[in-house]
Length: 599
Image 1 (cartoon, rainbow, N blue to C red):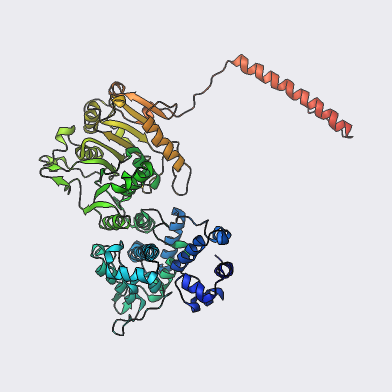
Image 2 (image 1 turned 135 degrees about the vertical axis):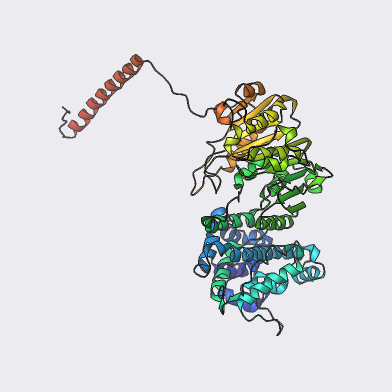
């Protein structure tokens, strides 16, 4: 962005001196002068103030807004990955690749928190007609903002773009010391972040050498300070932090075998699940394998989108999640606060130690959405023989040790209230393993229990190569403990394997296709080569095979024609070719050329 022209043009349009312009955007005369001379550029906070000034100016500066700001979009996946790749490159050589995330992610957290804090200052400044007044209110009552960021820990100070008068006894001697103190100051002001961002000492020294130099840290901070990478409330997708963690883990840790068991749900699959369960205001939603909280957040946002009534604001969803992995748990907890979402995130293994219970039974929820680890091969039936929550023996028996897929569906079913519904992502094999084989199969026995009790409302076959850690397609299994009368005794099977666009390295489902699939599920009508509503009796006949590809053939039927009809068409085409040859011969001979027929 050409800031020199922007500032000069806007001042001229509004007939403002540099001093008055500085006052309007909350900075100093010297700073504005430096902008116009090209010595420095506005930091993200100043850009936000300039953007607001443009909006407040109406028609006078409408074209300037269109030129400089209207094309700004949320930070998309590609841009986010570029930012993180550049961040990794800035410390490459000083740390091993698997350690990149330990140094990058806390700084991304701080940047995100600081940008969100700036957004809240702007919001309160409108309320109190003055930024200084807004800051005074925040200082007096930290609860008016999501997270309070102390002045010395705000990103402009971290990045060196704003001076801070350090007390003599607290002035950091190195950049590494400043970053470590920044993290500690933020966690001290926000106890809920302890253990979330204070996971590394940026000033650590071993054998007389810094673990990471100030030069490398300065490069990393400069990368994250690029104005293109603002991380405020409206600048990034809701689960940006989870996506950043996922990328760093996949790109730099999985080669070392450190990402085993980390399963992340592609954005579009999460939206599809949220649109399918379509939460209503006030409902309680649960994810027993919540990761960074992405599915829960999407349920809240989908509810706001789908339900425009006043109830949406007055009765938000209550969101509950449990997550085993420490980093994902921390991000989920932070996401809940940033997005003003009600509920609770706890840490632990939902299969062996479910934390949400009521006496001897599991707590039951209106909606469950989850993407558990696929084909988890350490399910020990002996360890659940005396399951206090009665999840397995009363629901078709125990899953095999080779795959806990249906054990997770049993847990989900036990967690649904009497009218509850769920959407669960699983490996495609979960829909058919054991069907068509002689004798009994543990997974087929559990599928039989679910089908015979008419709680499977639908199954969606997803496209190949969507998930980062596998090229397998995956399915979404929808459960409903109280189907609508028109859906009883039926299962909606959708073959969405073709609903994708090729991507590098992974395919994607366009949002138009996401809405198409969700609408098809809600309609519950047959659509050729896409949807088949199958009676339960037919599924029983097919040995409890729930795979959509078994019932929905997406191939275009081959057309067979009589040989004589084909020969007749060839004869007509041959005659047309001879007629065209004669016309061309006449044209070229008229121009003086010789037409020589092929022999």
